[in-house]
Amino acid sequence: MAFHPHLILPLAAACALANADMPVQRPASAKICTTCHTTAADNLRGHFDNLILKNNSFQMKIDERTEVLRFDKATLKVVTPEPAANAEAALKSIAKGHEVRVQFTEKDGVKTAVAVFAKPPVKLAASETISLDELQKLVAMGPEKGKYFLFDSRPAPRFMEGAIPTAVNLPFPAFDKHVDKLPADKGALVIFYCSGKTCNMSPGSLAKAKKLGYTNAKVFVDGMPAWTKKAYGVLSPASLKAAFLDTQTPLVVLDARPAAEASKGFINGAVAADPAKTADLLKTFPSAKLKPPIVVVDETGGDAAKAVASDLVKAGYVGVNVLSGGFKAWQAAAMPVESGALAAKATFVPKPRPGAITPAEFSKIAELAPAQRGAVILDVRNPDETKNGIIKGALTIPEPQLLARLAEVPKGQKVICHCSTGIRAELAYHLLKEKGYDVQFLPTEITIIDSGEFTLD
Image (tube, rainbow, N blue to C red; front, side, top):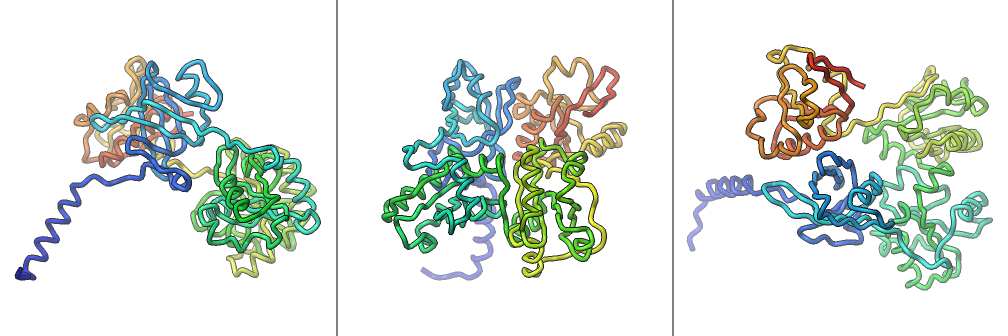
């Protein structure tokens, strides 16, 4: 066959157009689920998110994206570790962030869940497990005196966010490549942990260790979630930089060194935290409900930092970590240093959910005349709610009807969705975002009266 170079460009253009028309293949499973599971074509694996009973809908997170699923309470099958009276009660019992598998059907772009399976806790023999109290006693002694080896089976990004003191990262997905981290003595006490009762990575590590001949291997089944409720964790300077600073993840850094010493050099944004005055610090501290990540620093990762961290854990804060090696280790790693006066008060603003608009920005737009907004305000509440009042000029389409009435939503300008609490507005955001709209949503409560005036909580 003759080769014609002049055909290359037209052919390439044709291929590009064909590929542009093809639907983007999106992963059906969260990355962490693929470690242990494969996923059928009509299934999704991820983490349970918002439940909206009013609209017979729920959201599930698959890594960075969100899936919106409808359901029929009369026919939906829900399997949870503890039996429930009905599908609605079962859905309510699934905690936000819990791993789930969802079987669904799809019609006209709408996914309808026909079955939801909440991941059950792992089952191991009593002889293969170790309790939180037992592990705490060992960690307090340290590996040499306690004669144990502790391994974190989670992937490296999770380990970098904070780990149990004395733990070494041995990710289950890469276990076979790093068996050299295991002790030479196969009779030594080897302990694995991961992300909690439903996580299969530490039990998987246990099975691999036993197959290699380790006779005293155990699993701390409750894992990192249970540890953080009772004790502080640790992270290295490199982990702090990679997991929080480089990703611009909000956190609180507390410096437990004497003020005169700390002022010579400290981590950017650090707040002064006198170990003898933690009670005073807590009076103006961000609420524990916000679950702010907290890193406590002293000179060497010693008693001062540990005292402040322990006080915060006792006060109900989770995700509290001590910087391993302290400020000396931070400097030795050539990390950025600030000087001057440390902040006196800790502040924390959670990272907004994707697509969220701040209440202040929403108010600024909504208070303008409709023609001056440069945006469409889309009210996705139900008719029984909108009859009591809508923002002047707002477009009203109940969220369950949104896909069927998509032609009513103009595509040439920004669309800002709201409901009464932000949950259904977020559903609408994901549906419109998938269809190519420039869209945001209001993630807070709003009350609207018949004059069109509104107040935000």
